[in-house]
Image 1: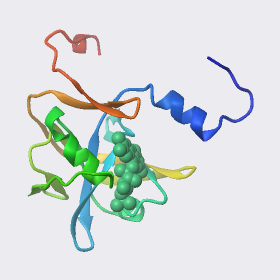
Image 2 (image 1 turned 120 degrees about the vertical axis):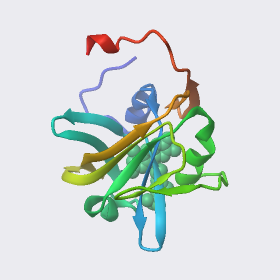
Image 3 (image 1 turned 135 degrees about the vertical axis):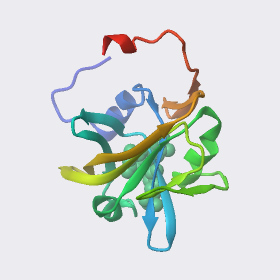
Length: 167
Ligand SMILES: Cc1cc2nc3c(=O)[nH]c(=O)nc-3n(C[C@H](O)[C@H](O)[C@H](O)COP(=O)(O)O)c2cc1C
């Protein structure tokens, strides 16, 4: 373990962040030629009133400008949807995504949960842009979650003993 006063190298930052286990989402939106999606794990809930969620979008991504100015849907993936995560990250995999038309934005068929948003505010985030979305619709189903840590996909089983009563 090391502590550095100088700015960390990108590799050192990546090594730390790889130990932060997350869920996996595909953010979907209406592209210029039809529905499009992009795999993202920089997703978190930000506010209950108003209801806001946060995503961090790489400036170099094709979706960047579009996600700043049109509705989008955050599809939280279930354990059996790893192929979709790979496909929408532009890595190997040839899943056949099935689409559902939402009220404001297209979404994937049968995600573990979905959160439809309108862009609310965006902020400079270095080589990313932080986009807050105002939640306009949502839904969920039962099932196990797809996870991502140490640059690997994994699975987290739905547990009966949560601590939701504390928050
Ligand atoms: C697990 C995982 C998480 C990712 N999270 C993000 C993210 O939070 N933000 C982002 O901009 N790209 C993220 N990416 C990379 C994008 O999915 C990838 O660059 C994609 O090809 C961009 O698509 P586009 O250029 O068509 O918009 C992630 C990739 C993986 C595999």
